[in-house]
Image (cartoon, rainbow, N blue to C red):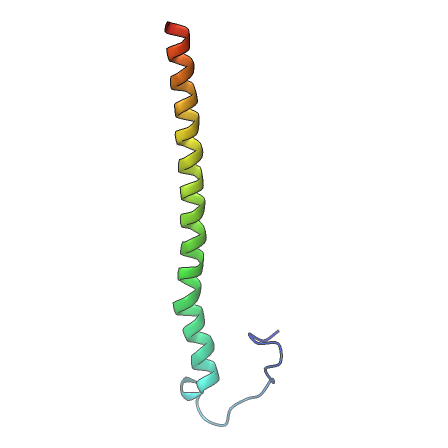
Length: 68
């Protein structure tokens, strides 16, 4: 499977580091994917923080209701 479905399986006649398609795929892997995954990890962190704060608020309100 290639990085683009219709990308033909070809072998360049010159060294790979100068192949523009190879450079484009490599740049995508090294520059775009980390930000993509960083976004998802950050979104999960924000969701977990929201849940944690909600549970803390619930336990605080229950403690206040019990002590009154």
